[in-house]
Image 1 (cartoon, rainbow, N blue to C red):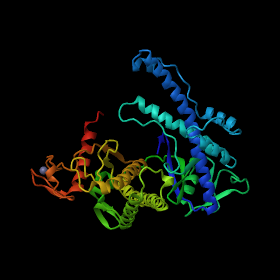
Image 2 (spheres, rainbow, N blue to C red):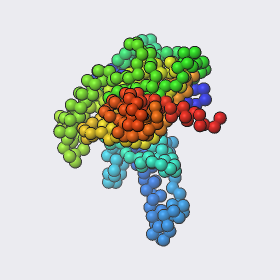
Image 3 (cartoon, rainbow, N blue to C red):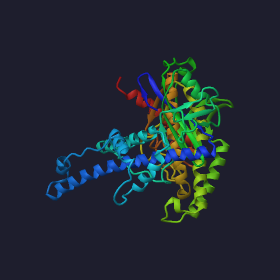
Image 4 (cartoon, helix red, strand yellow):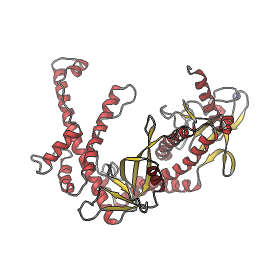
Length: 467
Ligand SMILES: [Zn+2]
């Protein structure tokens, strides 16, 4: 979500229910999008290489790396508009000379081009611009960099395409019209059914929201459409008396317990401080582990995805599908909790996700490494990364609507610090859930203790900040 003055962009995501014929069309669009990205990539990479060769020549002449970097002849890297021009010029004629990396894909692209909406291609060219801009930007910044962009390989990156001309069919809210008036064959409009009426999207549009960009993507066998909608931010709400009295809540996010809070939160079942993962989520995760194991067993080392066995590919699709399902279910749990937090408190304190190495995975916390690492790490990691980022995103944008302040704190040692006396000791964490201070003996649920520490840190940050 990006916020800009009085507007903000939200993402509304809906599952598609395409017919088998429509799936073929969506795949074709996704293939064209990938091919166009790679086409742009090839041109940009080539220009980049030319610059490197110039720089290396100077180094051979005895210049230091820094000098050579400075003195190397400038090379202009084609941008989306240049790529578009070249693309229009070459797509009509077959490519000459021997095939280079990615080039066979260009040839195939020209077959697809016939029916593919031009905007899909233009957007893919712009995405290539963004990929290179991110890489250049991160090279200038300190800290961990974004790697050099890579071409998109079939089976290695998800099937997706982006375009602006996707509209919700207003009469029933159950269909989207993709790519303007006609389908790629030019016969009839490509109108794809949604799994459920897109009520939220319709509501945002009715309130004046503007659809800026639409992404259509496949996860396993499920296709999704995501609308980026620019909406006006409502004027911040005033805090209620109840919120002011409740003050600050610290939130600790984890795996075994989905979230723990320093203060009780009023829920449908009463007051709670520990939020377990819903059971259906656990079921999906069990299934996920099963298919992941199958995937590992059937994997033939050294073979690319498209040459693996049908069994492996089936397992891979199941894993992708279940990952999507888990993320989705987790998101609905997160929607509920994030709403409760921003309507019941004046100030929400969370862990700062930007601090590296903080996530609690099967590795345990950074401070207290866990056992059984190999089996769980990858899976938990993926779910966590999505989950933590998502709940923070939700809390942050909802907080704006409710006038609530959000503080992100450094989460280091929050799970082994006594919130009563401040003593830090790994041994205080007796079991996964029991915290008992080795100095003052204070005992609490470990995750609730961590939530208290997060709250205290947020309050200290506020106090120390220059006014
Ligand atoms: Zn203590």
